Length: 258
Image (cartoon, rainbow, N blue to C red; front, side, top):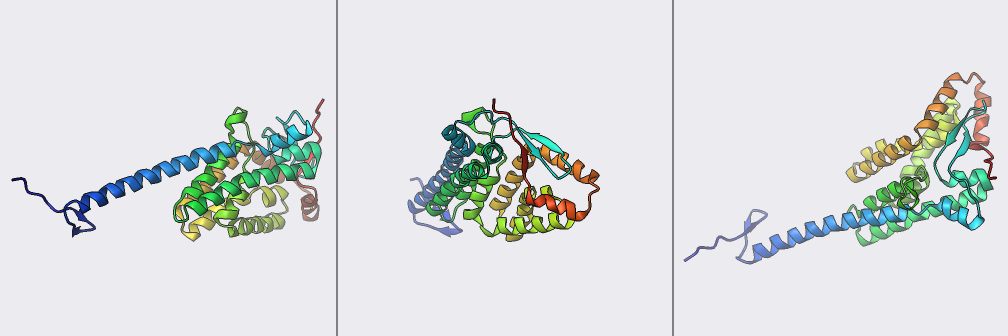
């Protein structure tokens, strides 16, 4: 007669049949979690691929969004930005159009991240959704993978994941930029502070999210950052004049839409 060994879960013997059921339940839960994470990534990416700038451009009949000349400081130094972002709309139609495009991009991250947080309150799905929205925003599948830089959806995701993080990061880099007299550093570089913030908070998933956000953002902004850095190194204007750049940053050369 075949002997049956009682199953063990957590080091304790369980009646025959019950251990098998609990093991099956654990396997199902793991498979379900993986499926949920993959689903969150796919949904987040597809939503993130919706471009607020392109939506506003279609509403307003604006074209030629592919390149925007950004004036990085008061010396007149400029750089070509090749992303399609709220800045693209601001350069062409003004601050209201840029704000509308930015709001769309913020909400496309905020809403699905919030839904994931409510549906999976103790799981990382919300972080995965927020990260996937970022990837979709910068590399949108609907537009030949040419998107923006990720600041607006980053803000949207952070509102849900940890609203304190962007406040701390923006204030910190605002002060640093003010001290050294560099508007680009003050306004564009705050995502860097997210990494030490989340390390301090002790959340591995959010640290990964901050690293992803910075990797995407700085890879996308590399050309602009290099130009801004070299311009700052060569800028001999007094501190007061450099700080005056804050009032008009970012500034754009009006694109030719003919």
